[in-house]
Image (cartoon, rainbow, N blue to C red; front, side):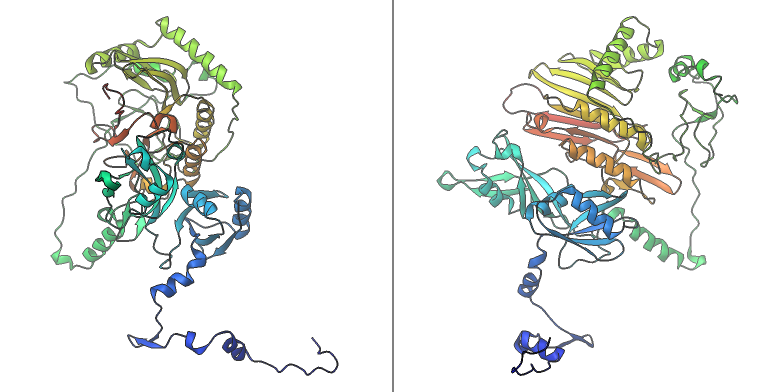
Length: 572
């Protein structure tokens, strides 16, 4: 810009002059040497000062290729955060998200995973020691203080106690409203790479002190070797590969040949009839239940040939298992049936369909009353009720779900759907009435999308709700262990269903993987079976525990839920 008439032109300044004017030489750190390299050092106070503007920053990690930044920004704009935020590209798999408001920071972090244009993004807290090859061990974890005195269930007090475990993030609504004085729940920032604190000491003024137990609801497994979530150090595949690499480097003469052991599969498969069903034969085809009733079990003395099928052979209509159940055609591989399924032809359900489902359930109950159920299923159900000591039971023809209950429980089957059974249960000793949904999810994403839509409608009631069963999908990548990458779209669908319906997924005691299978790339472990509950169900109990028991002959592990209420002097 030209200087006004009569004024002197400003002197020209170099970049070094501008820099020296904005900073004094005393602000520069003195140069040092470290292992022969020029070095500079910053104190912890300096690092904290520089990192202050990133106190609400998160790192988003994409498992595969990430979408364009324009699509990511558009998705974040549609989420509707309350304040401003910035999105920056760190590398081809990581983005930096910096929020102005703490509420937006917590909302994004507590969700843990986000689906953006079909790509699953996991969220981690940014720390000054961030490295793209490592995942931050600091995660949000819900903890519970069971039996905390009522006068200490104040937000300021709970934050002070929780700060002994980690930086507190938020208190759940039931604790704030004092609807559940038996337990106080708070979410904290927890470093899972350190030793956990199981109890803290609280000085209660002149009334003395006491030891308060700390219960962690779910702690994701974290490997201290590769610094990633999903497994422990003892299960790290990176260490196994390193050991294999060291073995390959040994001289051939020093290696001891191992004996090859072939382990047969748990199920025996036999070839079905060579007749292939055509569309003209479809109306005359018998349902799968007919296979169960007509199949004659082999005698103990009979010796059937043991046939191991080809690992690449499709398990469609050409194979029948040793229990006479015909497998439905599927493009997915055994042990990982949800990979690659697309969300196509999904029906949109409305609340008006709930009445039609209930009507169909009543018709099914009338069918059971008329003794038209398959004889094999009826006889087997009665046999199991007698052998296991239950008083009654129910066997679904559509979903293959069986329910057994004791004499102190009243069960009314409200709805029998293709993928779940809805019941109203009354636990007589407590006079506790709640809705129970037994789930057996299908193997494809399209069919499970219908399950999420139906369950969301049923969950709209006012009763406490408990869901349980084989959902046939995981809710996060930490619930999967294997060499292949699972279907991230299915994971996002299930995670959104849990979040949208405000369901609680408690941590388990024992092995977190409930399902095991063999994939084309090797064995896989997943958490397919679980209990989910709403806050109204959780608030009834002072203590709820979910235990994963040992697997026996099945490829799924049984899970056991136990609960107690100190205010009720009755059995659990």
